[in-house]
Image 1 (cartoon, rainbow, N blue to C red):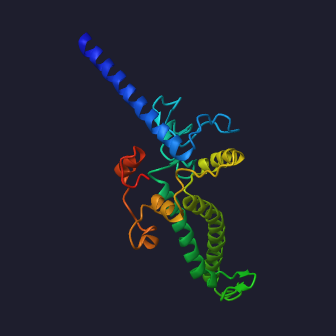
Image 2: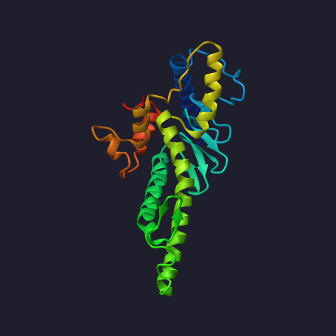
Image 3: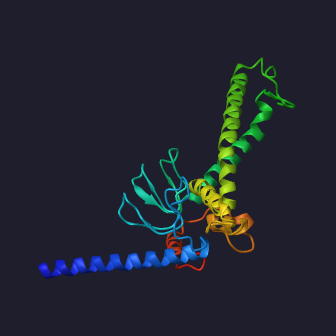
Amino acid sequence: AGHDKNNNNNDINNNEYLMEEFMKNKNEQIMKDYFFNETNLNEVRGLRNNPYIWRYCDECNIPKPPRAHHCSICQKCILNMDHHCPWVASCVGLCNYRYFVLFMFWVCIGCLYYLINAFPYAGLNFFFIKSTYSRGSFRGDPDLRKSQSRIMLGCIFSLAVTFAVGCLLFFHIFLCLKGLSTIEMFSNTKLTSYFKKKGLSWRAPSQNGMKKNWQYVFRTYGKFWFFTWCLPMLPMRKELLKEIMGQSSTAN
């Protein structure tokens, strides 16, 4: 039993050594390719750590890949973390960011569809747009008047949801095109300013042009990528994990 325990300890130590060497080699290559061989980024004001290198998570005590962050609510590290969303009761990151954006997209489409079809019967006057049937059209029929009130209420709610969700959707479309997460948007501002003072033009490793950034998020390639991005798709967890480890053809 003691011999087996020693073997297990040796295996653990060997695995830890291999992981440390892997992280060291990866980080050296990342700093060379994307950070002008800058050895010390602790001078960057307001930047806790470089989100684009391999690190150890102080909370989970496990290796943390580039763009991963520890969520204090979920109590675990999230790959390509964007934010913790209370509305879906989960973190939005690598495996579900596509579905989060598409959820907002289809909510807006659904609300707009309702508005277009229901507005003529709502009895509303919205600036220069007027409903076909006014509030007095069904005065003689209490049931139809009650139904019109419900349609009007639905239009008001749909308009409010479209505005609120639409603003958030456009913000995340902007992030998709830039190849950034919400967290990275703030840290990148500090890094860009830091290298600019040194006369260097810096771009984040995740920024590969709008088309490639969009395709990376929505996993749509080929001739009709601009159409298939919003269609249903099964999660590609294995392929995504390969990319994290730099073992995929689309990792770059």
